[in-house]
Image (cartoon, rainbow, N blue to C red; front, side, top):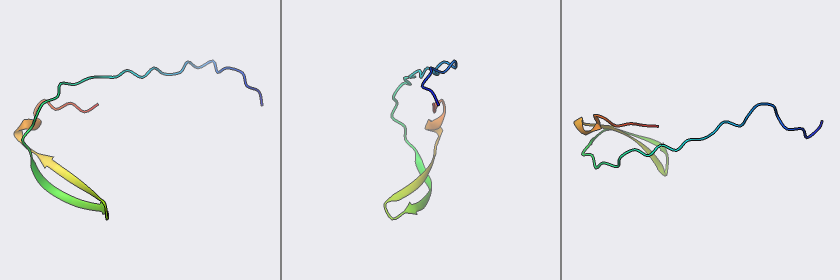
Length: 53
């Protein structure tokens, strides 16, 4: 085994900054995953235009 550089270039990570916006949402479901972790499912008209990267 040798320590030669790989011919494949390392992929670049690009940060995207989305506008921060206060949203009024409703909790539609909760699910306890662990004693200290809860999954929340949210819904509401304010989710329109929400972008997740």
